[in-house]
Image (cartoon, rainbow, N blue to C red; front, side, top):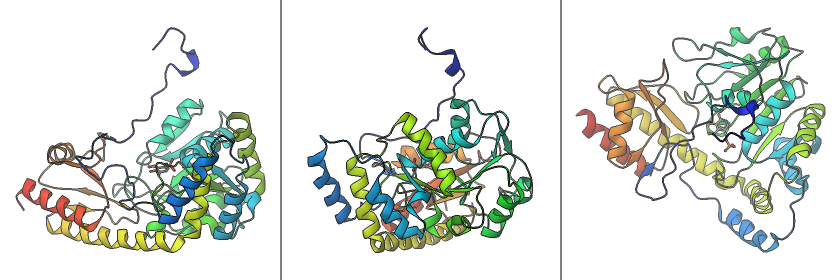
Length: 352
Ligand SMILES: Cc1ncc(COP(=O)(O)O)c(C=O)c1O
């Protein structure tokens, strides 16, 4: 740390992203990316737009926002496009939480939440999940804090029902409830349909996972016109051109080619079921995931050892050295070929 670093950020604990090796030596099942490339139309749209990079992008993302409105059934004023959903989350934390309205989120969830809270100097409460690692919706009823829930949750893949999300929003009328739906397209239920009933609900989604665009950085927030107006105030105060031209064009093409992505999601869901069954046959306990990853533990080998041994054999998975979940590994669901190699390697490792 330099002696010039602002005292406001000295205590910052940065987020540690999953490994991104520069070589392709690994089967990469560690950061919940899609194993499938973007659709041909997306690649063509991004390439075509590259010839116009001398021009700033449209700060309002008009075409993309209109397409998203068509996709979600919302009005364009209810949508804000962002540089990955991480940016939407950051804007939402800045906009809707402060000393008087601290954040509340589960102790087992997306590790970026406490990091953003630290960056924004927002106090937060981490609410323990139940022994079965499920979020207990009762804990959030009338909590009087700005609630953040990943649904499906990460890294567990477990879901709350829409009734439970609706009840949490209804019981906290003076706080915003942020639902992070990064993984909703793999069998979850979206809370977008609840927006008309709850003015305090904000839904955040991403193109990183189901739409194979993690490297393009595109997410969006959806909510009432007033909430989106607040987020826009922060966007225009920090980075008005937050979505670049190539990404905006790629996003439009991805929405046009929705069928391609739905088919890929269906394949991932099939591979998830196949992998879960294979792990269970090897004695693993596997949580019932509705995301593009599995969270599993083996009675034969601890999470850290599994992670290390798999890495040595060319397979990257994610391990979290955190109390309550240190026995588990999180495995992104890839192609069937990748999952077969993963299972064969695990079999060798634990002598199954
Ligand atoms: C629960 C959750 N939310 C949000 C994100 C951020 O995704 P992105 O910024 O790529 O849209 C992730 C990324 O892994 C995630 O797991």
